[in-house]
Length: 118
Length: 113
Image (cartoon, rainbow over all chains, first blue to last red; front, side, top):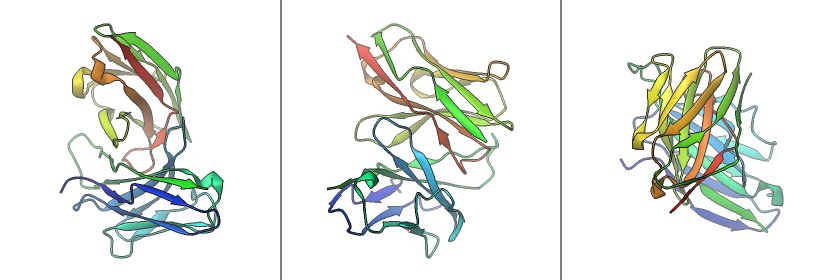
């Protein structure tokens, strides 16, 4: 396993179109997270899953945003009716809830999908 | 609630001189704290993490950070900068596990020859 994989790496779309991004986490990780990063800012938490359950989605930016993780493995993030303000880098991360000696777990990030809405 | 403030948006140092990237946090509980680095066209990479064990934390590539509860700070240091250290650095706070990471706005480190 080579880490968290995100596809596509770049997406250019016209305003009003729907887009879907895919994230494949590290295979033994049961937690998966989505973040958004705009230019000059740190990543902003959107939502996360533990296995197939979406445990936090109140931070999704609007009802145009939705995420799924149907079999507890890969996840998709969909944006409907895209707007220019949706242009950003969308990051996926994964982690494990397995107890580790230092009492914490590390999130591993993918390289992101850069969305440009024109 | 939790938040992170990175006190400098840009830091410029000469190669071979010390690096100091400043971070203050706010948290209503005992936080976990992290530093991540982001190189252009690469994913975020964990440099180091504090999880209530030793207050001085050593990370990869010679970086260290010291947790100071009284000052609510978690500054990142390195004794001698290398050209390859040029990147964006993020201070991050979490309520425990990696469940919901709150990132600072980042510090862009430039290393001059």
